[in-house]
Picture (cartoon, rainbow, N blue to C red):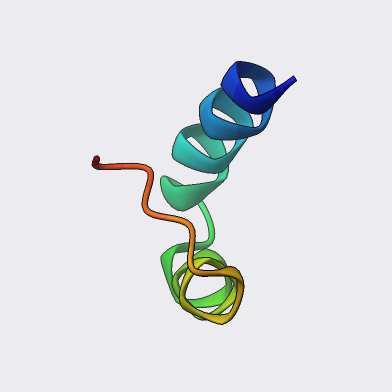
Length: 33
């Protein structure tokens, strides 16, 4: 499931970098790791 979330995050980052960036930072999730 984590892989799926990671894939989705990377996908949405292309369209919503601002939103996802805030969400990633808020959840402490780094798709680039």
